[in-house]
Image (cartoon, rainbow, N blue to C red; front, side):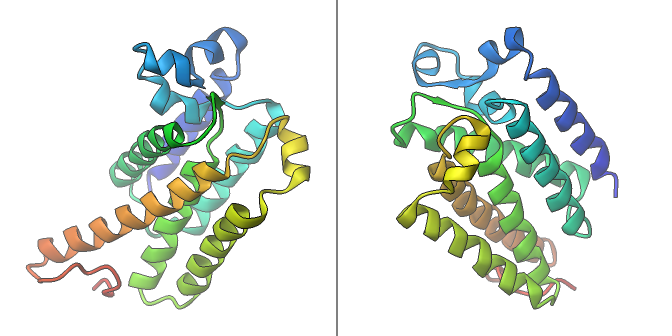
Length: 196
């Protein structure tokens, strides 16, 4: 597994993005994006509201990629990571947010991709993980996020980003299953098909 190189690079970029002079150019700001600063759709996911927020998301990235290390390959991981960044950044336009920072939407997507990969490899725990993450996302949509988390990060928790990440992660997992089947010459979507 060489994915660790990509993970370290992402963590370094996230740390650099915390510098005030850098974060003001990278964070997700609706007005700036609407006026041509489109890169913020991607880079806003790499910025954070404070150091605690950065540590929480950096730690979660390390844990998620460790748990699902058998499934992530470097090129595939980088592609999935940036697809999720783009999709979450784009999805935030459908929210009321004027500013957004954080990697949590992407993290939810990576978790879903990993859980589906577990299922496809025959690991029944993947079902528990997949149901669990979507139960959490549903809970947040109905009851809101933890007030303690909002206090720690100094901002409201963008549950819309979690929902977008989960849905896009599921779509990426489905497309990955289809692509794997197509490469093997099999028909059908292959979403839940076991890998051989």
